[in-house]
Length: 388
Image (cartoon, rainbow, N blue to C red; front, side, top):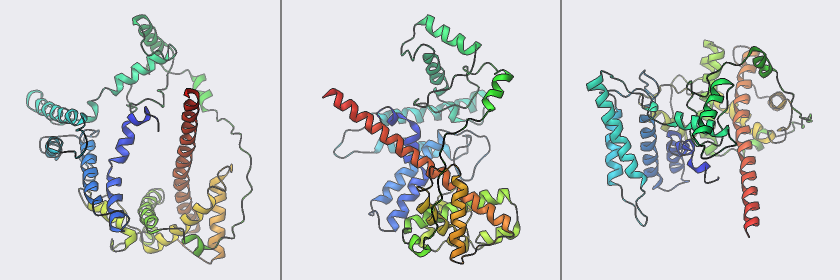
């Protein structure tokens, strides 16, 4: 990671997240981490709640997350007051107190005072705290700078010309290296419509230059593949199984399939259900939004995950990755007489496709990130050699 990437808020949001907090608790209960990790989990959860309070973006109340409008009687005020006091009281042993803690206290106090002022003096009962940022302005400045060869300090004439250029001509995409999150609003850089001809050109798909890959033989043994699945993996698979089932049932609303896929009793008593247990216990309203799958569904997707782990890297360059993986998975299940049946063959096929597509998406993202990391490290080594 470069020093510039370290400034990105999304990386901090991933570390100080609800899922990270739950993962620490799971690893602590599995004996992977010591007892001190529980306090770390609590701190991470507190920071996640703080991020949610300062990034509310919808008016309707949500029983799962705090990213809804701040009101006089909502829990946001109490959480912000507690975090403000926590930043003031926290101590650092063997290290200097970070200056950012003072900034956090100022930010929290400002938000609380602004929300109170809007309620009492201007009749605004709800505050969307996500709008209290300057990312939109910084994004505009970044786009204007791009108009003059990424000029860091444009003069008045250059800034005016850049602004006019955006106003008159086209859309300029914000750089992916920006440390500001895309604001997804109608920014000043998007003030002109593309012509119909240009729109049609954008819709034309580009042909990928990918060579065909031979599908490897599926002579794997399921018990051997399952040996590579750890208890930590089991927790992830069970949780993701509920997510996949939720996606599938939106595509195929069937009571019979729902009864097969889900556990009506919602009993979370197994070690492979720890992550889901802590996840639902951490919500404002238990069982809200989460689906608990049956043991049959879990065992089926566990096998599919094991096969996917074995063959994904071998088929990564295949022009028909999903189709090839589905062929191998179905062949291995057939060879071992393992059956998992929903209301129809088409439904079972759709459920399997849903899992494989979601799994491919995340596996590809991880693969791309690893390649980018290698390129960054290589560039850093080249720079070091040049300076020696």
